[in-house]
Image (cartoon, rainbow, N blue to C red; front, side, top):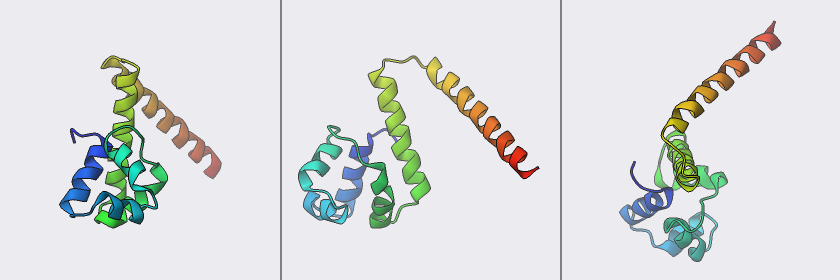
Amino acid sequence: MKTTFGEYIRILRTEKELTLTQLAAKLDLDSANLSKIENGKRDFDIKRLPKLAKIFGLNLKELRNEYISDQLGKQIYEMNCTKQLLKVAEEKAEYRRTINKNIKTEKVI
């Protein structure tokens, strides 16, 4: 999705016809903080993802992926990284998966 996570929350909120205050109350936030999240001035707390998924009837894993991809995109943008960085990062992630798989296999043996 080509929106920030905060913009995504705003879209969900307006589609469900919730005010900032109503959604903020459901998330145990104040409306000023939710406004900052929607406007990209503050990050959404990952711990609130299950609550957000429940409010909007979303798949938690898909919502988590949306959140993480936004966080990664923000970091790449803020650090002015090249597109090559994503390839290298994916290679490192795959390496970690392999190591983790090997460790789990060794524990079973």
